[in-house]
Amino acid sequence: MQVAVLSGKGGTGKTLVSVNLSYLAKDSVYVDCDVEEPNGLLYYKLKDTAQEHVNVKIPVVNHEQCIGCKQCTEFCEFNALAYILEKVRVFKDLCHSCGGCKLVCPQNAITEFDRSIGKITSGFYNETEVFSGKMNVGIESGVPIIKELLKKVLNKKKDVFIDSPPGNGCSVMESISDADYCLLVAEPSIFGLHNLKMVYALVKVFNKNIGLVINKCNDDDIIKDFAKANKIKIVGEIPMDLELGRLNSNGEIVSKYSQYSWLFKDILNNVYKEVS
Amino acid sequence: MKQILVLSGKGGTGKTTVASAFIEISKARAYADCDVEAPNLHLVNKVMNKKSKPYYGMSKAFIVQEKCIECGLCQTNCRFDSIDFDGKYTINPYACEGCSVCKYVCPVDAIEMRQSINGEITIYRDKNIFSTAELNMGSGNSGKLVTEVKTQLKDNLTDEPLVIIDGSPGIGCPVIASISGVDLVLIVAEPSVSGISDMERIIQTAQKFRVKTAVCVNKYDTNISLSRKIETHILALNIDFLGMIPYDKKVIELINNGEPVTNVEFSVSFAIRDIYRKAIQMIED
Image (cartoon, rainbow over all chains, first blue to last red; front, side, top):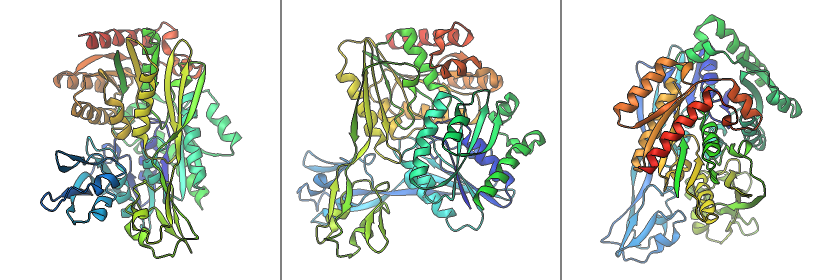
């Protein structure tokens, strides 16, 4: 089973939910796909870790072989190559690593080198296997890191919990691509509702099974009303609780505390019921 | 014209709450929402007279089935795994980045690049001017759309002294696109281990682009010791620390009413006014 936890809006509690569910599930996997701002390892404090770089291919031009035909600069849809002062220059931050320039060059003057854009840290926390991706500062897109992360867990015979990035763009879509179940986390505010609607539209396009967790619950029913109107199953409600917030803000896995563990056990059981 | 951009790294720390309050306090007539994946500013700072148009991102590949000879060269050469084979070759438009490699390698010209709508870009104009956009789900090109939101605002301005921009979470392309050209990045941090980690990464990002940066802490009293830690850390980095905003559940009530917090005088609005005053001093220096 692969469960993706997502929210549209940031700060609604994706990491809280995905860390606690994976912690309580037996023999599970936690994957932090929020590679721009990964926080899972602040909770899963790993002792022994393995690290590996994630690379993308960036073109290098051999200026001796280049005849200045500009086919590469004209081909590049991302303006990552420009012909300046009679030399082809590469702007590596704009490059999408499509390999097109290398293909079109009639002189075979273009080769590629590996550029590290981030890394993946992995290890075990008790029984839970943990993977966390982290994009380097200044890099535009973390999608290649998310792809690498998902490759690592694709054939695992374990329950996998994916901590997705916020928003509804390409990196979110990537992180839910193999998911059997999408767990949406929303908070009862007009911001939370607006962004929930956006991310709900995304999971519906991909025909995913979905459930909803409402975090920081108050007296406001705006999220519940939306769930009812759209027949979305509410699998959990986490109250607005300053003590829970304080523990979580200090990097504690709140399910280690008996007064909170039942809350997440309940959500986990509901998710299992829904998936089976 | 001076531009203040509100960022945070981590989501949900209160960017839009602070940005919407800044707009009210400053009586700024021009503002923009660059959080194109989850825009919310329009819910609190309402401007009438909406005009939207489709946003065209990169073109996407399309396979003309009648011409396709099923050689599979497109699939072999695509680095984005965006060509599926299920009895016939088709493009997954969500994975396609529009690089045109498949079109180039196709021996029978069966692939066309077709324009695709990746979102909607909107301008509101009454006495105020507000530029915003919404990216279609699953789309890339969010950075390019952010640039268009800023360009659209600039094209509609004559002589505005101050522009307030609400940014997006993270440190990737939409954030990088939003930073260019601004006079001050105000980071709204949150006193949690996640908030601190994310704040550090957004500070590094802002500094990479050499833009003046300042930090404030929201909901400081939910974890006072971490709030103090942030303040000490920021001052040690020689970055301006503009103040702390308390937690108050009235904030969410006001926001849910579609009102900026400055509509009511209470501890939160006092704190934001003070932060605003210091932010203005920084850009006037």
